[in-house]
Image (cartoon, rainbow, N blue to C red):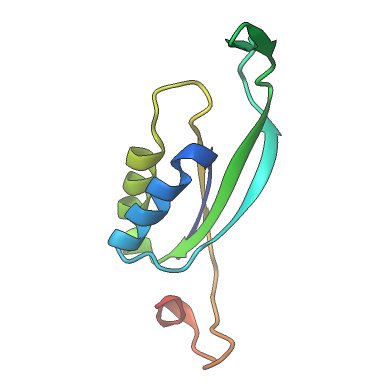
Length: 112
């Protein structure tokens, strides 16, 4: 099993969420985060310059079976993409075991 953590733009979250549901990733957690990115310059909007170094983002955490990993990553890459600096990052790590508290199931069956 793998844990996918994606930090994406808030503006792309709804598209990513809907696309994840379409491939039957129906359980994941998310929260709002703020971080500092690599962008060095600010932006000008309606004549006002503002800094984009501290960027509000959405952090998504998903645990999937190994065979579902690439499909899930591909969906996030496709739907979180804008082509601009600050589209985000995806991190993948290994999960040793999972348990469903209600039924005491463990392993990949606890993810369904």
